[in-house]
Length: 180
Image (tube, rainbow, N blue to C red; front, side):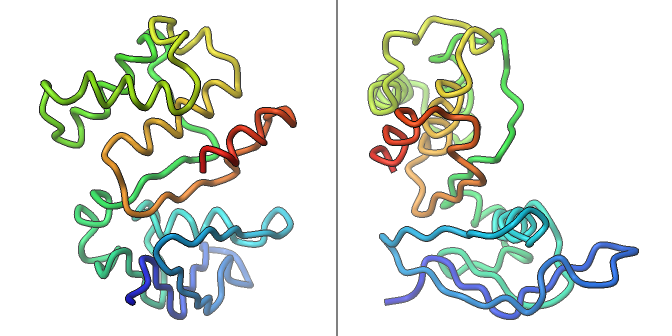
């Protein structure tokens, strides 16, 4: 079985840095597996995630998602990848349902299918009761759950999350883990 994520020799050096942020990192993730990067601040976790998600060019190595190289086929990679950043901009004034509907449209999901997808995702992340509330009124934990729903809106093959439980209380962390 081909790995859903394959990283070989990934190296990223930021200008003026003596040591690379990421140096010759290699690993593979099989479909259905759950992995986590654990390390101190500055260890290169977010740099690696940004490279995997096509958001950061790297200096050496190769990264493939679903068989596609992230550096030469970013559009294809983004179609099969769901990304939950550590901090993400939200359209604060949109109600939660409209926020998800907007991103479903970005993934070319036909309008007649979006309503059911949005309702299913809101139920999955426990936000059905807040569907009409503006994003700005949601707590940090609820925003994290909405971010997860956004990452799932196009039914990706791989989900990459950067600090998904940051700022969440213990109960919200357990709930998020159960959803994953």
